Length: 310
Image (cartoon, rainbow, N blue to C red; front, side):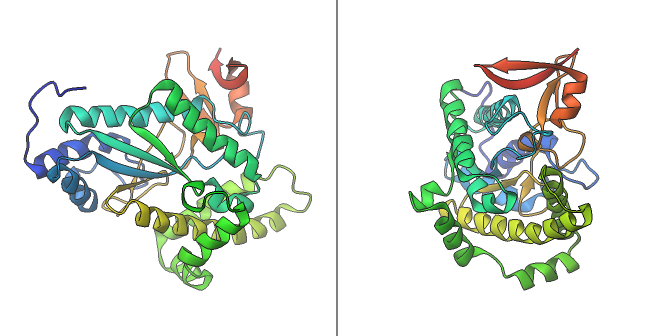
């Protein structure tokens, strides 16, 4: 879509204008809002693309797979939560094009295979989830989006082999990560958040809750190790990109946390929840069991899609 007005061609001015489109969706636990000037890492990366008159490339690790807990999600395939989120990301690319005619590209870096064994989701479900993301993008015509996963790096190698290569090449040591969790509040918050998700996602634990929590704390370290490894691999394959994150990020961090949809807290994502359409037409995310208490189930293409509030 051509710009409605002639854009300011100065790289700094246009970079600020581009970042201002993202700021209303900043996912953070800091008090805001904050001006674009407080995000120097993102401004520098965006300015590089502006100076080259090239599309701004964003990489967003996320969209891994659905939670294995049926009380939270409708199934193992993407549903309305993912559809709305992908549409939102593509709309951002379209809005950027009005300011910066070369536009933007959003690379969705689906990371399910990086830690599928740790979150206890079968690899065939992860494949089906990522394949459906690609189908949705093509079917709806979300031209600003693409999907990148471990198959793009390691091809048809067995999934355990791919994970082993990823971990060996990029993952931080467990000792270093434990030290960081002790020393850094943001890493500690991430560790606690992932531990909570792992506990919530376990639907069939036969032991005590305290035993489950101990196990999930150990698995949480592994998830963070693999997530860090995946992030470094992405940086190697997309070295100039503006790095986004689905996790809350402090103001001024190297990664920019982005909120995909309205949710009750800063950690909720479409793959850990279900979409509910309120009576006023707005959308929010919540666990399936809670959404079922608030509305009726709606199907799309013969599959459960979302709930609509009564």
